[in-house]
Length: 257
Image 1 (tube, rainbow, N blue to C red):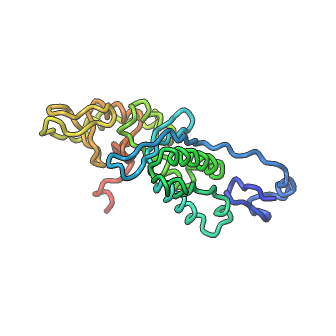
Image 2 (image 1 turned 180 degrees about the horizontal axis):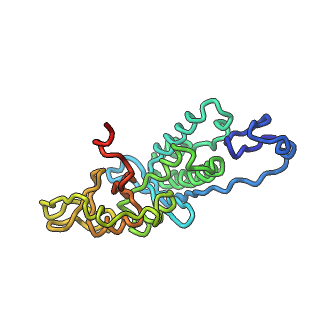
């Protein structure tokens, strides 16, 4: 009888080097299943603007946080391929849940955008993700799966939802508080046109004569918005790179000689 080693995440069919002799004696006893930290709900689907493919909306949950992601079926298939490649010859490879079929008899007769076909695929994707997260409960230790679940369309999220996401991903918190003077020193950008894009924090356009600041990564925000955000989490809420470098974070170029 196989059992899971919580340290190496392998399906151990022989004595695992991580287990003690006493653990080997009770290895045959039923073990409690790991409860996944993440959950996925396939919320719906819709054709893309040009109608060439279908976009599925997934709601990801971790603790009290939840966020939406939009994925095509081919992206789910790519994730599956990455997991198979990552496991290599490991025994875990054989235990991955089966990916929903790309083509069915119905899709051949009625097309890839037939509603009944898409509804069935959405149900199959739901079952796939539930089985996948039971099989790989430690999402943060699997780079491909974490990237798939946590690459977020922040333009569709509220400020509070962004903070919840940062907390869930381990980047939010008052311990990251930054000196207000460092935030005030962020470079300004002159908005020449009437509207120069949207601030992803407040979801409002950045207009001429407004105080717009640029982070080191190049993403721009209203100063009022980003100054509040950085006090909660010192990261860009688009790319998650550091927003404001604090003394001691990195040496000056002159100090490296």
